[in-house]
Length: 193
Image (cartoon, rainbow, N blue to C red):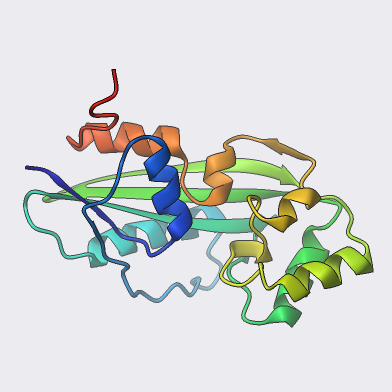
């Protein structure tokens, strides 16, 4: 019996998997150093972190491990999870009124085989008034979110346009995740007719 291990403690990723009828048998969030390397660009950085996460999860031979990493990129700049409200404000002010990229990289492991993929979505954030910025920072919704925002939360009111995958901006591109899990031998959409 094949078992699925979600290598992420993110409730959003679990919810997105549930949308396609997938419930992980176990959750094992890896603890790795996510510090970007000197000069590392956002897309290779994101792919490297997803790969390091999947390698860090110990799995039995009958287990498939799915890991993901989401990074917000403004040009060559990597905007990870802000350390405090000041850094969240800095990120949001840099993104406001501009387009940026949200990169979500996936890594799936079964035995000694690993599959990788990334999805890049272009996101437009509107200009933010001081009132909007301060209200959002006070909501604490920025905590633990790449770039200091989550499109599925209150900051969704700041995003008038995207080109790409909405679920990838949330943290897991469901189309690509389903394809990769099927490739690894996991029965996605089992029980659906």
